[in-house]
Image (cartoon, rainbow, N blue to C red; front, side, top):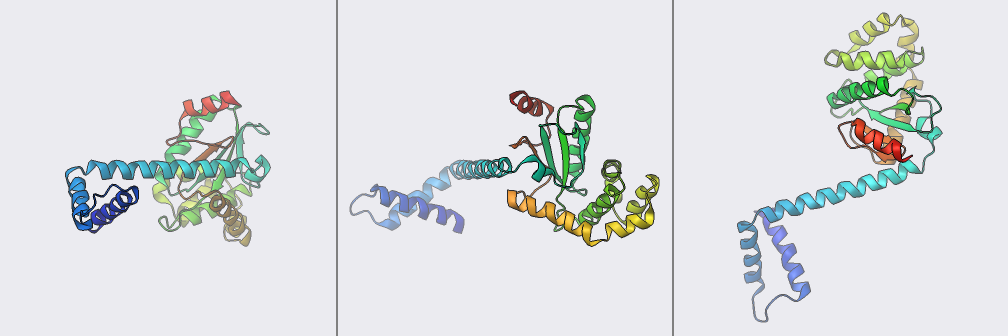
Length: 240
């Protein structure tokens, strides 16, 4: 009721500002009329909220695209792992979380696309562990970074997503053993200050770009709508 009255008061203020009130008509009566209209037509509120949310989302995406387009490819990639076509002017950037189920599905979709189109773009992975909701997101990112130091990021990446329900120290060591990593180095690297700094750099970039959720994809500065869609990728590449 309070929210409905708040909306009514906003509409009432607008009516008064536009001069729609009738001389001698009490403000309370006008407020009650507005409230009655909202009660009889709640779809007006729903449509207004949906329109507001869509406009906010569009504005956010436009700001993100503008920010991404101001960064050159070398800055976007940095020291992050890459796959696909190397030194290709087309760049697909993903911000991802190893504990996010939507990221796991996206990883499968990207992998399927790359198998069919290996030379279309360079693909780089950026860490965005959502620690507030995923307790293993950061440890998994640190383990993947440690695997990267031994040239095995992508194999480790695939294994983490394939066994996402098992995330934890035992899994991180098991995957490292399966990939025949130097376990002593692996443990040193994943617990190192360097690992923390590398992931923090990705987090800082995500914050700079206003990215708060995963997965997030941008191809040549154009934000991809989710879920990952091959046709949308092809359309962007056709324009570049």
